[in-house]
Image 1 (cartoon, rainbow, N blue to C red):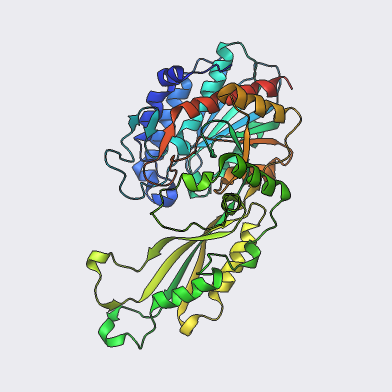
Image 2 (spheres, rainbow, N blue to C red; image 1 turned 90 degrees about the vertical axis):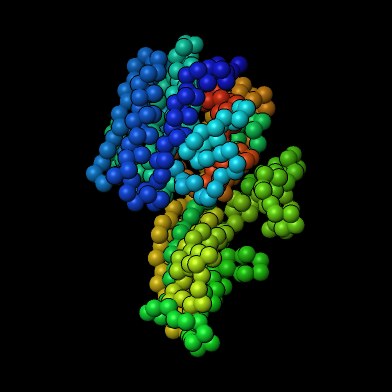
Length: 465
């Protein structure tokens, strides 16, 4: 039976989560002056203050700070089960930027509740994680349910690819001790009717490519037809790495064989839920989706390499565009990679394809902005598989679901390398229309409570395994 109910979460955690939603704690990639602005510190302090007010038998709250790096909040709750092994529960407090104008009545840093949904940037990705993790442990102690030693780690650079994480993992290595279980609360859900456990995550490589043809812009009436357009030459480079007709990535090093189990899982999910991926998309009427079936779209989301152009430079806004042949064009390319692909190898291969034999002898510069390997969950231990099933039944009344995710969580890949024999549970509240990274981000509060109750069941099973 659930131990935490929505009124309990509203009474103890919702005000603090709402206050967090109002803080523009942008990740360093999106706020170069994050130190001066102080928003990441403000978010960390808010969470630490809330954490210190929990009713727990024995625990400590510390904000770790390393020179030149974003803060990391660590909450350590001592075991009530007499076991010295550690469970790490992970989340992050940094946020994506607003990404444009939100819908009428909504703003990224003005939290608004509509029914059982709270709208604000970062509340589902991933501000709720601390509140969920500690609410679960607090409920366990209130009901006399033993738990192991728990360390909640909330970092502040995840949306920038977690560049500060490894340094903190080094600093915390002795404190974490004998880690047996990792619970990551930063993942997604296909539906809101059950606990969804993530089986894999794609990797990512972001590459900035610039094509320059002039030292300064020139009147297009004077030089067009003589000086090649930097935009046209950029298109030629893009055609090297992606088929413009099909969207297929042409970098061989970015492809992987899809495991039979994942193919079967996609088939089973499509059979039960239909085209669950397509249903949540705010499509323009008439646009044809990629993939020939619901099953293929699930696999495309989780095991196919893809390319998205996520930023452009050298292009004036339409309202100030003049008749100028511009000197350069820059594009930021984001490659999503299958979970088993080495991001470093893939990025180097793409870089070489973009740099070799520059079209029209233009000046081409390429810079790998960031990269991260994907992740595949280890085989579930005999105690954990039934615990997850029971957790979903307890919290949602339905069997657990397993699926890959198309995004990246660098923490899991980093921890997987450091602790190869540790059990992992990656889950979250990022379901349909939660809009992580997009406009109108929201958290479905009953789902947050459901995930919290599922954590209780898993922690209880771990303590008595």
